[in-house]
Length: 482
Image (cartoon, rainbow, N blue to C red; front, side):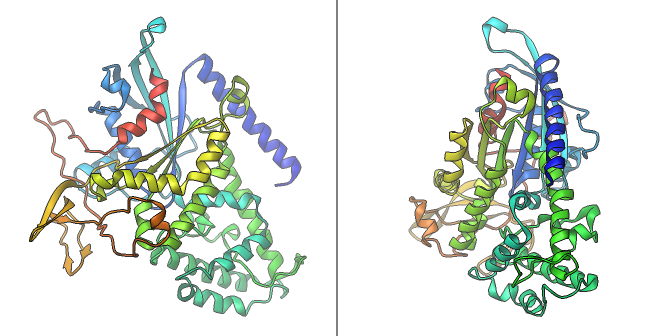
């Protein structure tokens, strides 16, 4: 971003932050929570479950305001940002409770506001109060684009091409690399050729996402989820090999570089400036089990991706001045999702593995003055625990309704029948997972349907079971309801 534009953008952000913080301090207390995570980490389910439990006033033993009886009510109210789509809570909770299907993954940014009415716990200022909770849900595919802000086109091209040499990627990358080999960066500018190169690169990214490394984290994220930008020049570029030190403006490389910079300035930086940097609290959801199942290479890639995401966050302890002019996220929670796929005896091991993966990011976060935590949770619990007997052997298993087409061994499930599945166990020492102690594919994590939830005698919505969602809520917002 040119210096003048950067200064203007930062000044605009400061003015917006000042207005929001002034309103928070003087008019209406407000907390802005960012829900982030890589693809298929469970952001939509987490956000839906958070609203559901607050609005329906369900029992939440680890959430102090609810446990102490101080939570009066929570209600959805109009959101503050008119240019951001509303989070479709009603559709998502209907999908979970009536259709017993998981909501569609996040494909655009969305927002909702909850007015939480509660009784203060402090004796010196007891009485009713209201907290406005603004939650912003981000598509996971956009997150790693934040790392592009500081990268040049040449550096990004080299890193992306080097990534094809990672274990298991050679076959997936072969069609794209074959085309890449025939491209001359110094060739005259050729728009149709640039489009073909871009399409070949996008096909490679899609194959990565669909392949065994389903946690693949190669940006740009909007290439797989373009929305209203589909076909635009800002989304029509690709890496090139053997780039010269200087890229001529009228060359193929010059065209690619110009569009790469347009992608950063028109797509990535506005998202970062207008949404990502304005949060007070942050939860980062992580599908650790998918990475474990894919093997050590996928876990190493996940570790790098999480580190890159945290480097992009504006984290630290807030002062009155920073709250007014440059707000920071003062609490960050890392959450390993889908804990219900494991027996509870492995939940602590899942948490320990997550802590290992984010240890570098946690140290940086704490050094900046922010509070940081980890938790293994299931925003909506799809299974219950059971024991499987095979002869004299007993196995700790989970039972639920696998989705139609899911397979364990030779058994293919019909989406109706319940089944008990022994998922396997994580090693007691988390480092052993990174060292390859768990063979890829040796654990069993079929996708289960949401649980059967029946309304009560008065026709009120049933209770969506959860694992440690209440603990996450306490860490993220409990202190602001004290």
